[in-house]
Image (cartoon, rainbow, N blue to C red; front, side, top):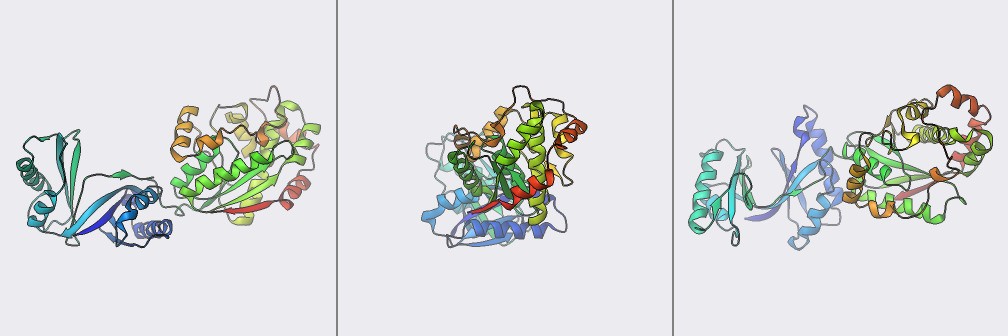
Length: 385
């Protein structure tokens, strides 16, 4: 008998001939996450088995595994040679004292095993009831479920509890993108959600010192650091936006300031994507949340770039975004009272339905190429681990 961790993946089952590429990437990501722990990882018919680890670190290891995209669950299990006698022996070793209801749930991947899953459920359930006469079977909402998995590697696994994991697809399976990371609640959530779909993330932050404080910049660094728990190392591109905002303030109608500012951000982000081989821009925009996030506004800002712009929280309301932020640990940092550059020179009545033609007309007062080049020349790059 060995103590192991049983790791389950979800939608990777839907992959075809390239499924092994996804699984190999997932295994690599798991081992990277667990680089500080001695352990071995093996695959067996739709499951990953982690073994040869120090049991005293099991809770820490489980916590790390729960942040790995591509996995849906992890459970602490016992592993033993498959036989009916062994299954009965180890199932009856499970401590069910203080439990009122239970059920047995078997997955018989090894079809050579002589009993069906349902027959084994009944057989082990009856044995448990003999040991715990006060227990009752509840097939729908039991206090405890005894899971039995009979695998094709001639091993059986028994466990009681499953811990949910991050789900999604393995990090890196979807390419790389650039996240517009402000100090707010929405953008870290957007980065997390796109990483869940397999995107590796770099980030860009625009700051407007001295209008924005050093603390505002440090807040963004902290948000990026929290995100690394899920997305791994983040390269953060910090862009000084002060001169661009002052030029917009002096030369453009106030109602269009936010629109033109967003268009500059997109231009600069696209240049960084081109330089660093990043395939898309990611933003935390939610439709209708503020004036700059109307359909017309997003269309006007999209028009200056030729690469995809992903908006994963586009249909989320604020409560839903906040719930994800709390789940991933960014919420408390995001609400710290340090303003980002989007609040500098904020007009009283920003345009809700801007037009591309009007925006382009006002931008004729600006030397767009020179301003973008200046911003990129003063770029600061920080690798956050």
